[in-house]
Amino acid sequence: MSEKRPYHHGNLREALVRAALDLIATKGPAGFTFADAARSAGVSSAAPYRHFRDRDALIADVAHRGFLLFADRLERAWADGKPDPMGAFENMGRAYLSFAREEPAYYSAMFEAGVALDDPEHRAAADRAIALLRQASEALASQLPPGKRPPALMMSMHLWALSHGIASLFARDDAGRRRLPMAAEELLEAGVLIYLQGLGLGGKS
Image 1 (cartoon, rainbow, N blue to C red):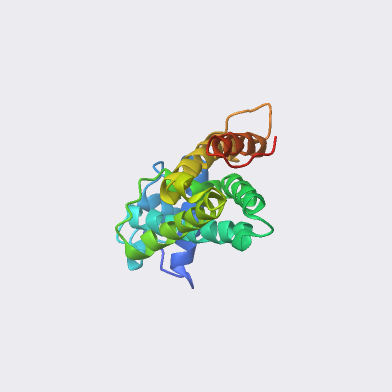
Image 2 (cartoon, one colour):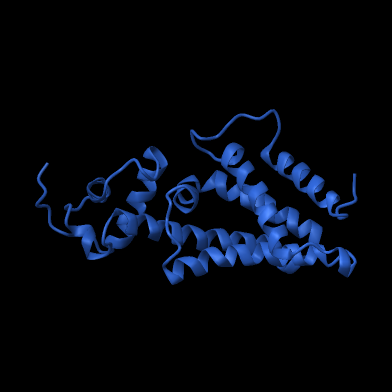
């Protein structure tokens, strides 16, 4: 196939992002080259350099978009802690798992591609998701006496790690998913409940 095809996309950047998402979904974030992305987008191997310095920059753009979508989902699920902090936090957990299941290519770009957080916009997008988890942790911890409240950042990191582990292993809609005799949501709910009960929260049985 000739490499002299003219640049013809009305929006080359978007075409490359779509191509990268398709390639990540089928080959993983490390399974394709910059030239593969150009070929999938239907342009010459030189055309992507109009928008991205290299393949890593393209994947970083995909990850950035993923974090924006991810944070939007978490924010809608949290809904300012309504109807109550515990119920809202459970909604966040379900949103976390549904994102991993429904957007496996974005999820891989965000968490498995080794994208550095040195770009301010990318860091801000990732930090927004963390901030929402911290906000939820603060709301839950506020139900404890002041002297027994765990640090909100530590609590949010514990809950993030639990959610992320279950999402990565059991909630993805790709070949990386492992089989479970229960729903991933049930596993996450049980794990979070045990954790919160250890802190003196979530007393329901």
